[in-house]
Image (cartoon, rainbow, N blue to C red; front, side, top):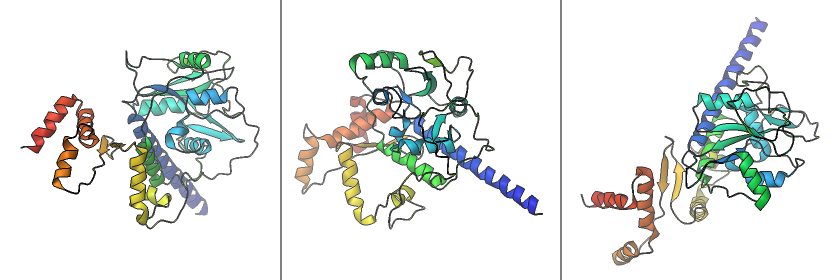
Amino acid sequence: MLYLNQASLKSDRQGVMESLCFGGRQALAKFFNALLLSKAHWYRILAPSSDEPQHVLIRSNFPPLSDFFSLSDYSTAELFVQLGLAWHKKGNHSPLLKAWESFIAKFKLPAEITTFSTKAKQHLYIRLGTWKEKAHPQANPVEIWKQACLSGSYPLPKLQISSLSMRFASDITELGFHVLEHLDSESECEVDSKSECEDDSKESRSVSEPEKEESGGENESSSEDENDGKAVNLVSNASSDLCPNQFPLLHKLGVHSNFMDKLLQELVKYNGRHSIEYVQGNSHPGYLVPQPSFCSEEKCKDAITAKTTLFMDNIVSNISKSASCTISEAAECLLRGLYQ
């Protein structure tokens, strides 16, 4: 009976982990899908280690995904381990090529994986966003790296993803990844036990080519610390009077209701005092437009009709973007709606 109970508990635990793993991958897929309309670029799956040659130049021209999530490099690597997209052994993290291929294919993501090496070792890179034939032509990691080495930098797309990052952090927190133990080797989330391949070739290669991979850690740190079996806290604990079920991220960040005005002021300031674009729960973009206060009706008329008014410009611009129409068509739509 005891044996049966232990087997049942082990099976239940594995089922919970697999469910959490799938939920975490869904959150990650939603994050990547939201970048579809952004200008495309190649990003490093895991950040380069400090002892990797030219790691500063690599990071500045191929930002790691940890920069997207506003998480530390270690926290991001640990999260990928829990999602079955990387492994951790003796202080080294390495992404799993076949797991990333499977993840992209399963969720039909507008992304692609490739391997590229600045020296002798291959590392995984992911392309996110969309190329545009004239405005933003396609480039591979080799071309980007050559230009970066010649000029010292490569022009990166400017992404406004602060609200998207917060949504992702909220999603994984709600799933319980801040307390989840590392997935063990029996979890089905570990699609493949092989990591980034090592190759003498310095050219990038597409994942569509036949793969012959060998295990190898990406991070070549000399640390011998073993995995302690516990997940890293992805957001810090602090006191908050907000309900953790309704506002998990704000609660974890320690935001108090008395400071909500200050929080909103800083969010508006962070976005350049213009409209704030964010991803809604249905994965479609939403917009928040700061509306100034007016002390009189006359002041309101003056502000709305002023040529330098950003308030009305932002509303029209947001309608234009979301409806995929011209500025003139968006303005006409707004006027028709107001005078019906």
